[in-house]
Image (cartoon, helix red, strand yellow):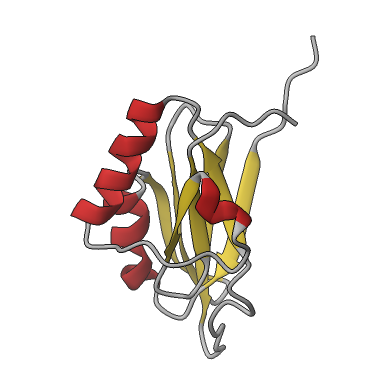
Length: 131
């Protein structure tokens, strides 16, 4: 049996600490690892210990990362179970994050889009991924 690889989504940020409430309290991730001044980079990895993916946010000393290049830079999480989707949306709202209109209206039909402090967006999609 072939095992699946683990996915790491990595991106820079100018303010890692500002991202933590969005990804920890809003999305329910935990800090898996942190590092400081590793070859001029600070960073944090967030996710779920048993998930085959995690997110890494880094800050390069002396380099400005800027904001998301467009409002259509998305991470999409599919929730086929209505109660789980409702709980995920409530967690985002309880953490102080309001939904924003999606750039592509497709995502507003069965989901809600939230924007992190760097301008990157996360869609909580109330549907099963079928493709």
